Image 1 (cartoon, rainbow, N blue to C red):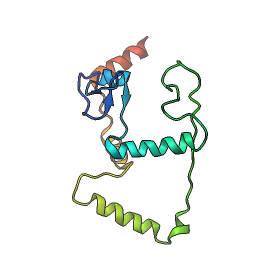
Image 2 (spheres, helix red, strand yellow):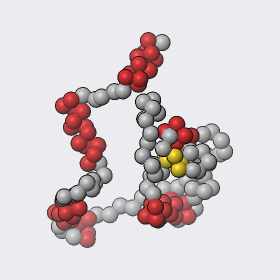
Image 3 (cartoon, rainbow, N blue to C red):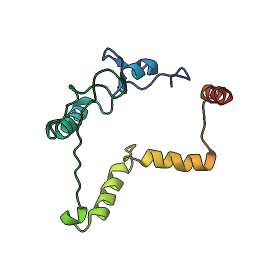
Image 4 (spheres, one colour):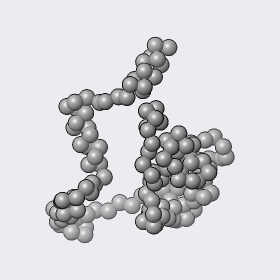
Length: 144
């Protein structure tokens, strides 16, 4: 978006001072917002508890940034939860398929990976559309 002079959607990024921004360059200096609102906060809190508090590692407010060399190692933890769906139910897959079908019917709801899979199919048929400015930058690097 920055290379093409386009804005990003509201609610997708904050600038370096923590203010909401639609400027992609300011967003790159700040942070991308993965999920917004109360649900996003709850999801982030759950991940911080499982990955930081439960493992005895740093929580997000204590960890140094991954994107810079400032500070020491982030010392973040990970929690891996593995479940065998057949332990709970023999009809997990058909029940999941029915749920996804109901959620996505007659509206714009997408499930994770659906957009990527659709774009991949389209790109395999039609090729990948590369903005002219980006193509010029790639060619300049290749010629250097």
